[in-house]
Image (cartoon, rainbow, N blue to C red; front, side, top):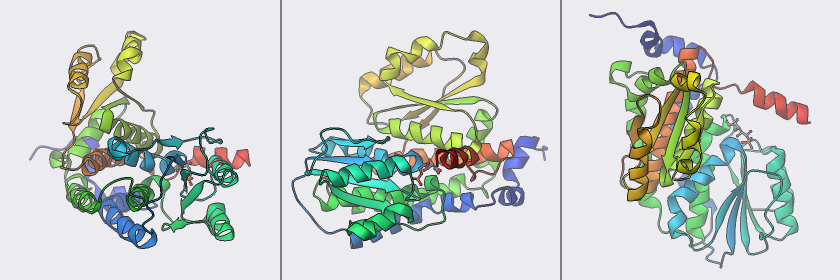
Length: 354
Ligand code: F6R
């Protein structure tokens, strides 16, 4: 038998991975399928049918608590009759009023930007729905008797993407803003469970696409490009690589990047070899965007790494694409020898802000 190279050996050494992963993030990621199923069931019990006319939907959240709502918007955008926007900042846009549904989402319940938006939504008489595991947001929701979806505590927010996204979709369903979700959720949960086997740590690198991709990206700067449905997945990959692997990564989307970033690839020439471009492709992409992706690949350094989504529903396709990135980022952490969970720099900054 051929000896494995040392990096591959690292990825296949499950006991060393478990020792490195002090907060059990591998296990949480492996359980995402079940998380999706549970989040939908719990939200359906909690959320009442309320087919009021909705003037618009705003989601206030940051980082791991915001991306789930972006995902929901990306999946159901074309069937929504009103605007849906994610606010990653301290202030709500001027158009938010009493006809607007405002989701305030913070895993910890203590994120200051999100709490600031929540305060403004209350002042404007918006229909507020809080999603959190506790903190100041849960306390405020209790005091003001606001609709509250409580999610389990003890996870890294980014590992709670099912708990943070699916309730938003379930609320939109209850408001009559999107159609029946049950089939999409069932398909997505089953797909994630299958993928947990294919990408999981027990599956050797030789037969594991997530480990193989981590090996390709290790030591380089990943640049993740999506289009339409996969744009949000590209953003998720970037965030996961940043936080889990503590590694710089960038993302962008077609066609916008054809109007600026494509020119930036001309310089600095000496850095080109350090980037690895990943395309996240989806079969429903506009044909011109597909053409743009092909043409652009010719002017990018190195060979583009391609991943195509699979599945019937848009929800299953986009969450599966995100899921590959989750696993890749965990294996990149292993290759760096870093614990995927702690995000010291984020915590330190929050402490210093007071
Ligand atoms: C993700 C992560 C951050 C937080 C963000 C907001 O795992 O650690 O991106 O999600 O700082 O905090 P929360 O989610 O508590 O509102």
